[in-house]
Image 1 (cartoon, helix red, strand yellow):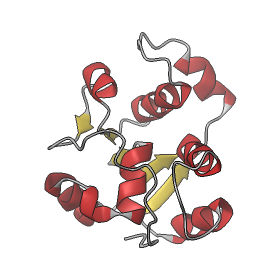
Image 2: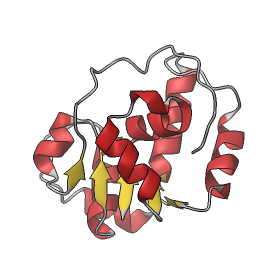
Image 3: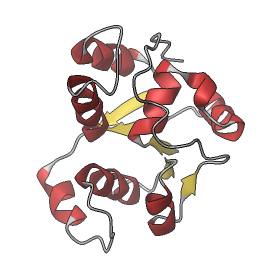
Image 4: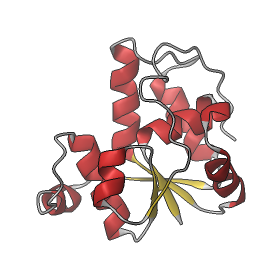
Length: 145
C-alpha cells in the first residue's frame, strides 16, 4: 500500500506525464492509495501563493479526490502530531514530517521525489527524479486517474 507525497499527488492528479514510468505503473496497479490531509492543505497554500493553478477550487478537488474509490485521505490528528515530534528527521518542513509519520504509523510505502525524505525513510518509491520546481506555474487539467 502506498501514500503519495504532495508533489507526486499533484503530478498524478493534474499532470501525470511528469511521473516517472515506474511510479505510473505502481499507481495504475495499486488498489489502495493514501494521501495525508496535510497534502491538501499544502496544495491549497501553493495555489494561494500562485505556485499552482487549479481548474477548480480546493474543496471541489478534495471532493473529487475522495470520490476516487482507490484513494483514502488520512487525517492529521493530535496523536500523529505528537508522534511527529519524535522523528529524528533533519528537515524543517512540517508537512514532510507529518507525511513521513503517517507513512510510518500505517506501514505505507511513501511515493516521494524528495531526496531528504528518501534518505530518512527507507520504504519509498521514486525513480528518475524530476527536477525540483517544474510544478510551479503550470495550468493543469484535472484527470484524477
